[in-house]
Image 1 (cartoon, rainbow, N blue to C red):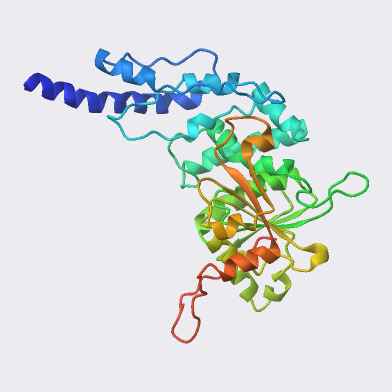
Image 2 (cartoon, one colour):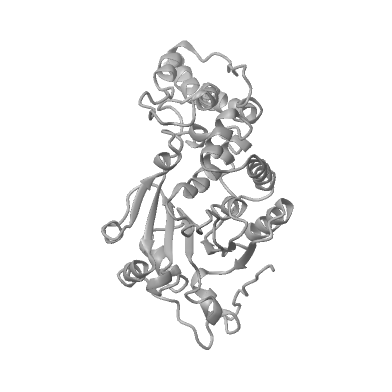
Amino acid sequence: MLRQGIIKKMSRSWPLLCCSLMRIHASSTLASSSAFVPCAAPAFLQLSVKSQQSTIPSNIPANSNVSYSAMAKSQSHRMILDEFTEGPSTSLNFAMDPNSPEARSLTESLGISSEKHDVLAKHAQLVVEWNDRLNLISRKDCSVEVVFGRHILPSLALAALPDFPLPKNDDGSHPSAKIVDVGTGGGFPGIPLAILYPESDFLLVDSVGKKLKAVEEMVAELGLENVKTHHGRAEEIVDNPITGKKQKNSFDVCVGRSVTSMPRFCFWVQDLLKVKKSEEGKLVYIIGGEVEESVVSRLIVDIAIDDLLKCEGASDKRTLILSASDVVKVANESGETRPKRGPGKNKKKRSGSTIH
């Protein structure tokens, strides 16, 4: 009985110890060519660990622009643990060193210059630095490789959408678009897109002031002059007595990334997009998992991030697009309501803030 108790205790604690050691070491070894090998697990655990290691997908698209060596390298540094432990983060599945040939090949295929790629790599580093001070993204497995592969690349994938953000001019240049990123959090997808489209104006919206402060600092550090922020709820933007009328139905594109359910998100942003048929705006939403039928039946586009990047296994998300008119229809069917305003309500009302 004593021996069985010891084995049972070890089966639970040993994988957790190995996982912790690997997390500490991962950020410095993901880009290294020499594999990190954790201390050997007891024999009774080795079989279950080996049997659950990730494998590289065998059906890579023939027109893929990226080899899997970077992903294979990052996966070789981690251990998929068995049922004795809590499930590990999936972020390492999508880690990619921004300075690797694979990463540069990917961004080049999207028409991104080497100079812009370097700015994107710097953005990844800034997110990691700020994440040490406050929770912009999950602190579990946070590294430059994870930020670039898990957060920046899916944002950049939107550049592969037809006519994004707007149809090109006759000379092939991008026209100036007005884009709002609602629930930007750590600046995704807004900041990467602002780097790609310097001719467009971006408004990054979030109700968490600390996150927006970090976003503002990163925007300044990256030298982006086309980004403003708004501290508050998206539906309150049009309520501002001074700027609200100017902001209502003024945006060409609204972007968001896994902020909330699509019907609720549509309710929040329904007054922001342009509604005239000749210049109707659109919602571009990055999401994972199931989507409500009321949304699916109205989608203009439903495409996997992998397909946009032409790189299978790059992301587990997809991109959905709705026209402004359908955003309003989904919002009307959402069952959401605006909070009541009046005497005695919201006495400590949060004031929105915008950087110019």
